[in-house]
Image (cartoon, rainbow, N blue to C red; front, side):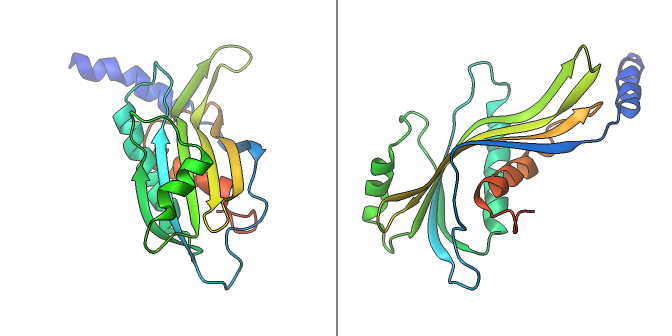
Length: 197
């Protein structure tokens, strides 16, 4: 009985604090300048590598890593212009590779992919701010670094950081949407505005 009473105020607060969420996207670096594939063209064979790089005090890294992978898989599964040859996690003990190192990595692959996408996940989770001027402001956020390489000529097609945030005043979100949030952040980074969902 005590447990039910202990959680009742929290449930009441969650019901009371329902705000209107909006999405904000900030990108820095060298963003992708044109679609990875032109309309009607054959899908490009693409290999994907990803690596989590959490802050030292990150809570529940395994939960976030599983959500990140599901989000990557969701985005790639909905992307008709990339024929994904593989999704590989970069070894945690290895330093992040250079573009040249990535090109060398896939040089001997058969068949050789036409594109290589490298995703570094730095933040994926809920946030909640309590204070002035807004009493409660929350939501979820994704911070990713994305590199896209043309493996045919070693050209860098994108090297960008995306900070994706969904939330607002009186919005409280948990971890249930993290995979969709990850997918949306990748879509904002790699999909032309006309095709973004």
